[in-house]
Length: 119
Image 1 (cartoon, rainbow, N blue to C red):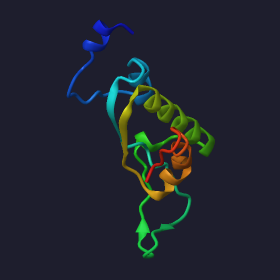
Image 2 (cartoon, helix red, strand yellow):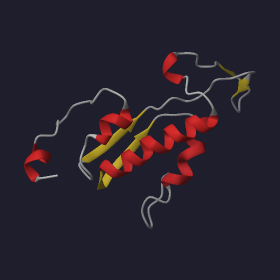
Image 3 (cartoon, rainbow, N blue to C red):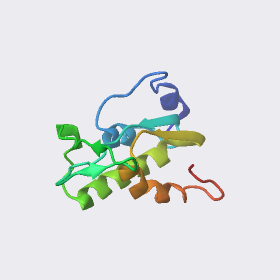
Image 4 (cartoon, rainbow, N blue to C red):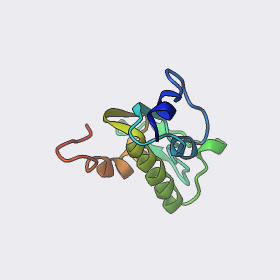
């Protein structure tokens, strides 16, 4: 992408839309921060409890209806791949989630850059 097109990118704005589609429209290494709050995929068939034994309510909103675990993995890989592509070398990924979803894809993030780890 030319320097002129990079200069026309939105600045100090939240880009709203399907995250994979929106990031696909951005040039490589053009973003300082990706802030993500992906679906937790807590479509429970039974009860789920936290370590303190308090009950976790299942999410039944449309935005969290991913389908199978394989579908969720494919979605997670797609948005993480786009996030990696658009982040500048010194960019950051901030993610909201629970140990149920982050533990599924966090190991992949640890291999993004040599000597770099997610904590």
